[in-house]
View 1: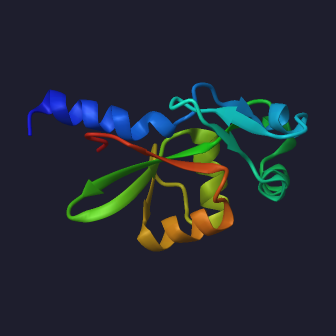
View 2 (view 1 turned 135 degrees about the horizontal axis):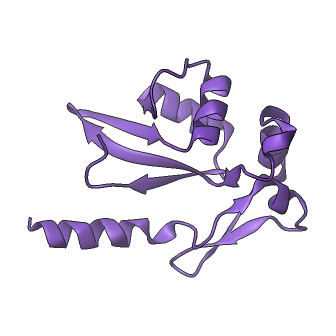
Length: 133
C-alpha cells in the first residue's frame, strides 16, 4: 500500500481523538465532563474514573494533567504494544499498574493494556501511528 494512502487511513482511524484535551481540574468543574472529538461526536467521562484520577494524580498536577490519556497503539517485533509518551500520564500508568519507569516512554503489552482499560475505559483513548519506535 502506498505510504500516502496508509497515512490517510491512519488519519481516518484517528478521527475519534479529541479536538482539544481538557485538564483534570477543568473536567471536575463541569456538570457533564466531556470533550468534543474530531469526528464531531462528544465523548463523556465517567465521574468515578475522574475521581480515581484525582486520587492518584498529585493535586499540584491537576491543572496540567490532560484527559484523555492517549494510548499509542502500534506493532513492534510481532507484538501489539501501547506507548504512553506524556510524562504525567506515564507516571500515573506506571503507578497504577506497578510498572517501573525506565525510559522516555512507557511500553505496555496486552495484559497491561487490558488492565488499564478495565480501570479507565472512558479516560483512556487509543490512537494509531505509522511508526512509533
